[in-house]
Structures are given as structure tokens and as C-alpha cells.
Amino acid sequence: MKSRRLSIEISEEEQIRMRNLIPWGVVSRIMRLLLIQTMDLVERHGDIVLGALVSGKLTSLDLLRKEDGKDGHKRSKSKYKQNVG
Image 1 (cartoon, helix red, strand yellow):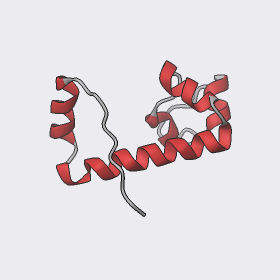
Image 2 (cartoon, rainbow, N blue to C red; image 1 turned 90 degrees about the vertical axis):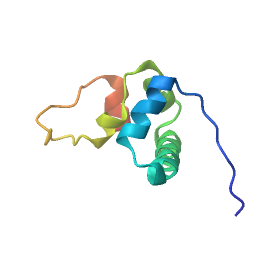
Image 3 (cartoon, rainbow, N blue to C red; image 1 turned 120 degrees about the vertical axis):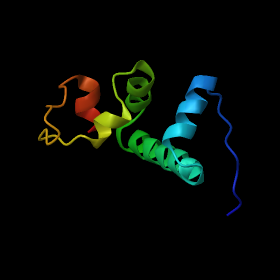
Image 4 (tube, rainbow, N blue to C red; image 1 turned 90 degrees about the horizontal axis):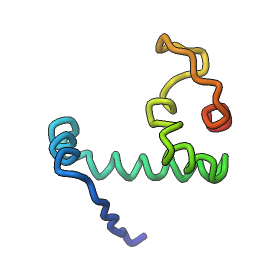
């Protein structure tokens, strides 16, 4: 399979933050995994996932949390998070 490049715009502050937090060798892999996982969620749950992400009602942190609140917080019962978990 032939690889393709994806180019996104980020602010200078976001680039500095990324450089400081994520080792350079894994940035591409992480971005690819996040995209693949997002597409998987859209295939399973529909466009509501995109709306929830763009509106800020759903974050990658929400996806890491367990329903039982192992991180000490109960997940919100909003319709976005409930349908996407």
C-alpha cells in the first residue's frame, strides 16, 4: 500500500508544546493512530462523533476514561458521551 501525507495547520504555540511533550519519532504514529481511532468511532457511531469532537463535547481524554470512573470521575451522561463510549 502506498503511503500518503496529511498536512495540518497548527499554531506556533501548539508546535512548541508538541515538540516539548511528544518525542519526534512518535508524532506521526500518534497522529495516524488518533485518525484511525476517530474513523473507527465514526463507522461505529456515525457523524455524531465528529460533531461531539468539533464542539468540544467529546475529547480524547473522555475516550480513555472507563464507564466505572476508575480515574475518580464519573463520565458525563450527555447524549454525545453516552452514545460514543
